[in-house]
Amino acid sequence: MAETLNLPVIDLSSSDRISTAKSIRRACVDHGFFYLVNHGVGEELLKRVFEESKKFFLLPLEQKMKLKRKENRGYTPIYAEKLDTLLNSRGDQKEIFHVGPIEGTMTVTNLNQWPSEGNLEALPFWRLTMESYYREVLTVGKSLLSLMALALNLEENFFEKVGALDAPMSFLRLLHYPGELAFSNEETYSASAHSDYGMISLLATDGVRGLQICREKDRQPQVWEDVQHVNGAFIVNIGDMMERWTNCLFCSTLHRVIPAGQERYSVVFFLEPNQDCMVECLESCCSEESPPRFPPIRSWDYLLERFRVTHSSQ
Ligand SMILES: O=C(O)CCC(=O)C(=O)O
Ligand SMILES: [Fe+2]
Image 1 (tube, helix red, strand yellow):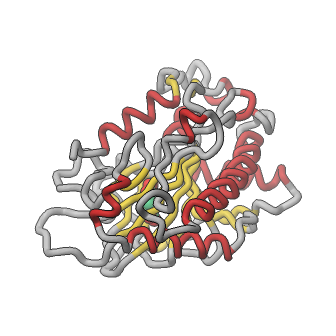
Image 2 (cartoon, helix red, strand yellow):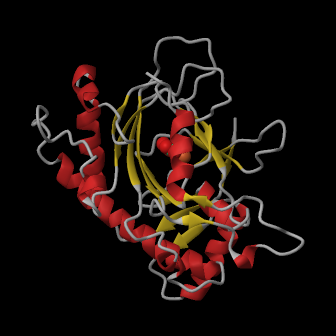
């Protein structure tokens, strides 16, 4: 049995921003994961998101396949994504639906696929619900990033100033992990070990267990700890681009979802920078003794490569 971890709790509504920023710094350095409470996203809206998500995943496969993933939007069937690229398995046991940016230029927003349109009129509130949630969670993410900038001794609007938050390429990811599938003798995971790609991820789950984190990725054997569900809290974690910006001061922690023996739903919001934003080591995070560990990279080039290696060609 894995040990259960007590992750730090950050209160987004606290008026003491300096002390909140300090707690965020500690959490991002020590764990790369924390709970976010009093974030302002209504319980009722979150409940509707899970209901609508469930309605979509309950549709017959051939209907879902009409919205098959294009430009990282739409439906990804079971096994088509494998987050741990080193794993010798068919793929992860989960199905996914991605919603891309809903604001910005038409060339970007038009790429979204919506189950409430065309031949899937059975889900009339689907798009509205997902768009409301997308907007609310993006607002939460932006507030958190201003505190994270403070935590890095930067100006609060640092991520705005570098263009990261100008039409950010954020993705809402709905996940459905089926219960037990047919017996398989391969090592299969619901979501295999990975770190997230962007700045920060905000996760909500239905409470079914399964999420684990590994705090020291290079230690062998790896130690995995269970992350408990906390009612009303988002589980927030640092992504790889934030790790690159901070020269590994903030850790993009390895995590996975193991089969719980029962069905599980979750919803993740990946806050990713604007596609042209250059992600490069912050001056405050490097020195002669600690030079930048990664070269500067354009956000979208980085993301496209990560999408490419984690998806099968089917
Ligand atoms: O479903 C979860 O609890 C985590 C999902 C996850 O880590 C991901 O999709 O990146
Ligand atoms: Fe993840």
